[in-house]
Image (cartoon, rainbow, N blue to C red; front, side, top):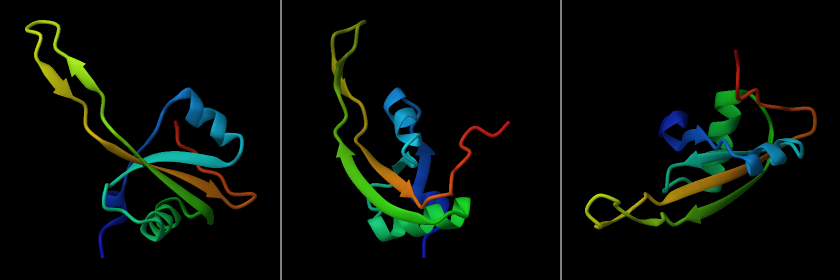
Length: 96
């Protein structure tokens, strides 16, 4: 079995992800090979909460042009998971 920190990479910090926190849903970047049950088990083990639903999406990396020499590069592809928690549970992503 893989370690939960190998599945959950990092939380997504954006305005849309902040808006979802009000609906008790949190967004994370996850490993590309991670499945929904693996993501659910990893979140429950790391944060000690009850997960109600997991939605995943694959985002293709943007194609970007280098300013200096005009060559093209590509940002990495990312898999995200939007995790909805049970009522009364929450995750404190920004602990002091």
